[in-house]
Image (cartoon, rainbow over all chains, first blue to last red; front, side, top):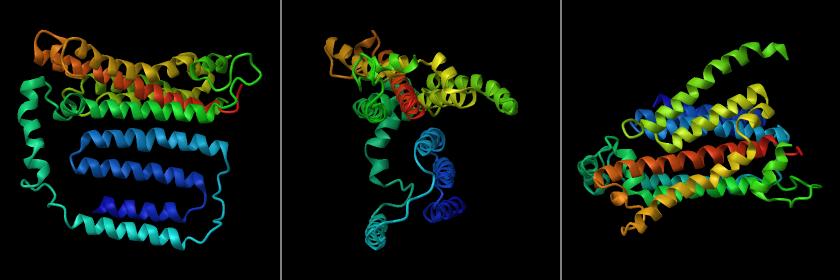
Length: 187
Length: 139
């Protein structure tokens, strides 16, 4: 509860502040609090990821992006009434949706009665991996994780193509070629 | 330039331990929380810390840009390649059973190889994105 209150306070801060540097730092604090929430919920894998990606890498990347632009938010050109209504409506629908969820940690919920208990019962015999999360992620749901890795791959390629445009301009080699341009970048 | 001596020494002390922790998270992922994704991000974080403290050109000597950009598809290749190997051995895509004589050991080491693939792609992707931001506008 304390964590969620802190998260709410930080969210208000993020919305109110105009200085983007402060917003980035607050985002980092937000991620750390989210990681703590995941820890409290016993989702240690997610907490580790959130702390490393959300609080660590993405802060650095946002600061890097900030270095390329201005650090003050531009004044809004349109009224924020319609976005406010959309966001508020979505929040109402989400809260309404949570009423239909089973109680947290309930033994009779579909998550715990369906395939989940099956994984817990069988994963050690079938893979000899004591950590069920690893067994599920990499073995039972290997396709899923392959898709995830492909998403990371696609994201990296996309960012490289967007930001490296014009790299190697004036050189004999072509413009936005990923690996080929890499050798030019160092020299 | 000499004012950041504390930062430099602290970073020098921390980076080996960050790397060690990343390796622990990777290879102990069968027993404790973590795995390729988390370890890849931590490795990238160590290199990014090095780049921030010692300068981007020092980091480029450790992790050249071409190598980082090669790692991005390499990891996906390792992952998908594992699946194709199991197909060549006559089982469905990404079924690790036939990789070794004992299906349980095959699962164990199949997951291990796949996690290495995840590590390579994630570390490469994070660093590639970081380099793309940090080196923008430079020749």
